[in-house]
Image 1 (cartoon, helix red, strand yellow):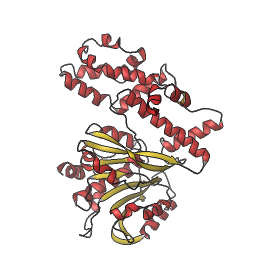
Image 2 (cartoon, helix red, strand yellow):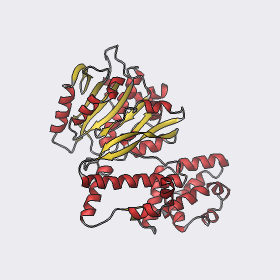
Image 3 (tube, one colour):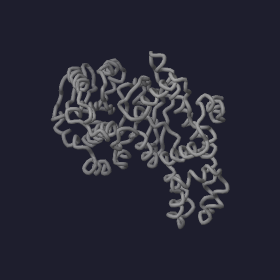
Image 4 (tube, helix red, strand yellow):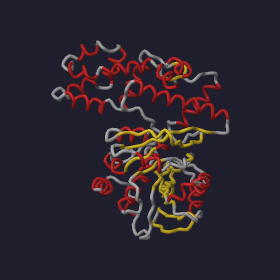
Length: 403
């Protein structure tokens, strides 16, 4: 596809140039990208024992570490074990392709720890390197699918991991799998269960408010089409939040499908490898609990405010020359939140648009990021967070989802 070719030529990482002169007969039906930093090789056993092995997939494993990390022992040990897990088919500089024993599947291991990754680009760059290589291999027809799967080393993939996306309509740009956290450590498990409840509560609140951005933004649960990935110029090079920003962009190109019946099992664990996300959040929950503090989260009233804003979108166009009149339909909190994220500027830029175009552009503008800023502004200026347990009890959208 031309859009992928243009992306590879102008925006892809240098590794794509190295993936040439592969054995001509190589073909893989599916591709999975995993960034690995401070990971043991334990997850390789899971892959080697999985029924997915017989489905002919290519695992692109980007073994990486930030430039601020001097110790590379774990990364070297992982790379060595991968190289010893099968037969070496091909190698070029920091890339090595290993055929897994007695299967049609293989691992392309990428060494980005010898030449480390800029700390600020972190896991985002690691995922981008892997996904860029996947695009290049699709163009070379080494990978036959047009779907790139993104997950992590702590994920156990379901038997229908690849087949679950076959039912996706043409208008789907990205799919997210269902998920569940497991852990033998009771303290970590309970803390993670709270965090998972909070994530489901947040998405349920967005659904209740009729937001177009009611999806999970977890990097280990994603599958997206290569052409759309290329259109948004790949994963953002960020040390955290790369999954959130990628999904936010892709959701504007097509539908986001939640694959409810296919569940990825995630290992609940503490982690300081990224500045924010599940690992740091769980660690904070445990620390607060040890200090006798509860877990606070968004008040359900905030989602009522969001719902009211979106319900009055049709009148926003009619009253675009008289914003103060339109604001009378909203709470004071909503008014101030919208002003803080730039609603006035948006309206001024679209005064001459037709109604259908105005409303379409508003949905694009009021995206997942601005929705989060809207919620945070209200939280920080009047509607304080409450105990998650209280939020779950009070929220009508959680009660209705349980019925």
